[in-house]
Length: 81
Image (cartoon, rainbow, N blue to C red; front, side, top):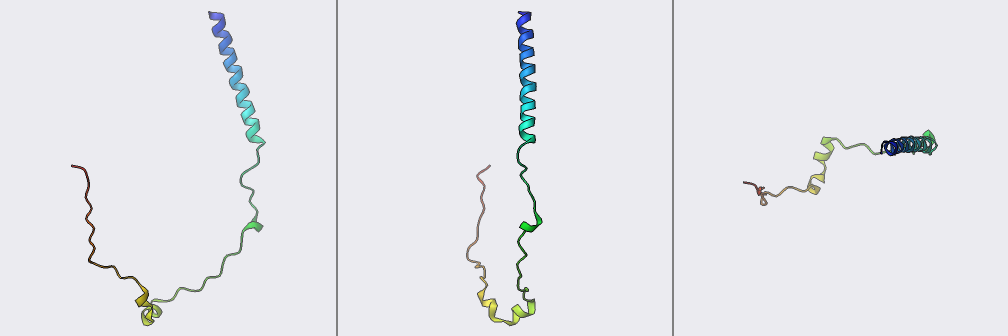
């Protein structure tokens, strides 16, 4: 019985070391996920400036905003005791 325990322990040790080394080699030779190139970055888009508060107040854009109605009140209830 002691002979077989020793054989199994040696087999597990060798199998563990072999799988570790094979995994290490596979990961070391795999392609790298981040191949960064500065030329691949697209140029930043040009945005128009944000209007000032005075421009918004003076224009008639305030009619386009949705005003919250106060008719709907939400009551949150928990099902716990």
